[in-house]
Image 1 (cartoon, one colour):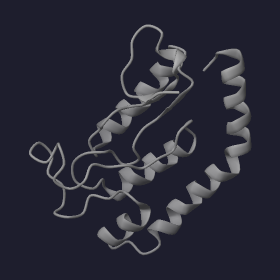
Image 2 (cartoon, one colour; image 1 turned 60 degrees about the vertical axis):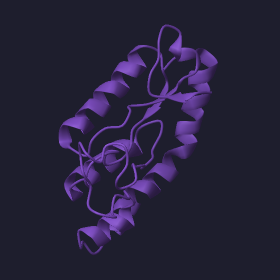
Image 3 (cartoon, helix red, strand yellow; image 1 turned 90 degrees about the vertical axis):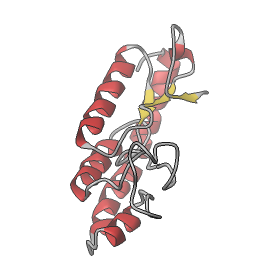
Image 4 (cartoon, rainbow, N blue to C red; image 1 turned 90 degrees about the horizontal axis):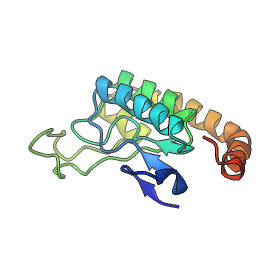
Length: 146
């Protein structure tokens, strides 16, 4: 298996992709969804994106909330971000010393008591869906369908 963000003819034979290093803005969440649907239409069964974006300042709580909800139902659910001062520092500066996209850091950074627990609902739902997701993953692999 190859976990990649780029491909070419035959890319469905190493079928695990993510939508790349998106910025923490609403239009990038839409692009991640479009990328995932396009991947599925080309035969790639497994894809994901970075919850709340990868680059730039922390996402708004609303963007993070919607991204978590979407990720709950995607083949891969993950949050990940560049370190503050990373490769995109000049283009999209983050908050000094605070670029980590965990639910508990979002709660702390935006002073939103209960935000991490709200996000935990979606993570628990994801865990409850794992038997279904696993059986569908086996079907995708066995039948070579997204």
